[in-house]
Each structure stands twice: as C-alpha cells, then as structure tokens.
Image (spheres, rainbow, N blue to C red):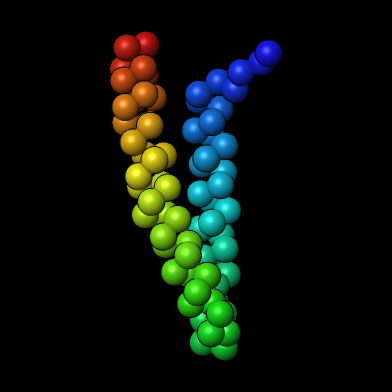
Length: 71
C-alpha cells in the first residue's frame, strides 16, 4: 500500500487554495452585474478562514517548518 508523503499533501492543498483564489478573482470581476458572486465570495472567504488559515497553516507550522529547521 502506498502512502502519500505529507509534503505532497501540503503541495496539493496549495494548489487548491490557489484555485479558490482564482475563483475569487473571477467573482470580484462579476460582482456588480452578478449578485450570485457575493455568495461565492462569502463561501471562498469561509474556506480560506477555516481551511487555509486553520488546518493548512497549522500543519505547516507544526509539521513542515520544524522539519525544515532540523534538516
């Protein structure tokens, strides 16, 4: 059974965060003419607050950065 390396998980999460930021950029451009863009922005901000700032950054701080310092 193969396991995904923890650093790969963080890299994959970075890609996901970048995709959400790209979606936010598109929503910002549509904001004046598309009321649904507000909902999208709200959901994206919630994702960034809870996932990126919470889960993802916490793993970087607790796992990745200490490992890099030791290496």
